[in-house]
Amino acid sequence: MSRPSAYLDHAATTPMLPEAIEAMTEQLKRVGNASSLHAAGRQVRRVVEESRETIADALGARPSEVVFTSGGTEADNLAIKGLYWARRPRRRVLISSVEHHAALDPAHWLADSQGAEVELLEVDEYGRVHPDTLRAAIDRDPGDVAMISVMWANNEVGTIQPVHVLAAIAHDHGIPFHTDAVQAVGQLPVSFAGSGADALTLTGHKVGGPMGVGALLLARGLTPVSVQHGGGQERDVRSGTLDAPAIAGLAAAVSTAVKEQEALGRRLTALRDDLIHRVRQAIPDVVLNGDPDLRGASPSPQDQLEGPGLPGPGFPAARGRLPGNAHFSFPGCEGDALLMLLDAKGVECSTGSACSAGVAQPSHVLLAMGADAAAARGSLRFTLGHTSTQEDVDRLIEVLPAAVERARRAGLS
Image (cartoon, rainbow, N blue to C red):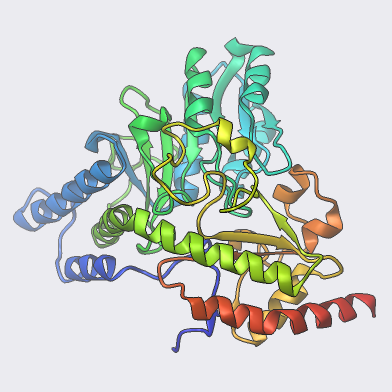
């Protein structure tokens, strides 16, 4: 299958890195269960434990804090449900209103069936949770807060959260803090210890690894109630036979992505800024969503939120926005219609989360940011990754004006 003319949906999934393919392929040649005691099993166990050490080293964690899962959704479920159950009878769950559904839906399930009181933390027009918002929510009844979850960087609009500040506020009250860092790993400097988070989610296919594997980083002393039971693998937190080939691929991808993150961030920032500038020129009434902190733009509120949870002064990408993210609202267009018109011209993008693709409803992220329903439905996300090129951006700009014009005509008919 040939590569599409312009793949601009790396936030949904990014192509596997060669290092990940090699590591996974090598392990696929072997036989053995990591829980078996014979030689073949011990060999597989060694691969798993070396992978655990590699991921821990790359992300500022201890190997014992790495719990392998089937991906980001399972890790979010384990963190949110497991920490809630572990801290009962506390009932309050504080979670940002712009989380991925992999985090929001488990929280709402707890409210529907387990008696939890879920409180959505409001965000500003850029999609950011401000520290005072979290403080006020906790102060309403700090002794009844079971856990807090705020993503590191938003999967739709790319806004970066002040994770280290929010985690510190949670710790002031002895409340566990979880962050979904699925979009951040590989694009931003991510240190588990430096962030102050108690639990952190990552997944393979967003960072150049395989699908179907991820991890939850769990601080020592924190033991969520298991969501699934069986053989007692992974600290008895996540039972199930370990997928050693996928784990090897995940570790190789995380290691490579972290090593190359600064250089990739420089390149993607330049490409992204060019994309945004040229889209604005081509479609004058387009609206850029998310933090506007681009090179040469006015300082954003993120300037007052620097720290170990955010890119520092030495990192050239915008402090407030993921280097590879550009998210727009196109007035007069339906996002799905515009997406299909672009797809017909060889440009692949998304209307937001791939998990919600094809669902005829406005983005909950944009609604939480204050957008009206029409703007929320008429939006597209363009995301760049390690295989992105200037030709991808050029192709988008070549076909976008005609696609927008046609989508607007369709909307009027």
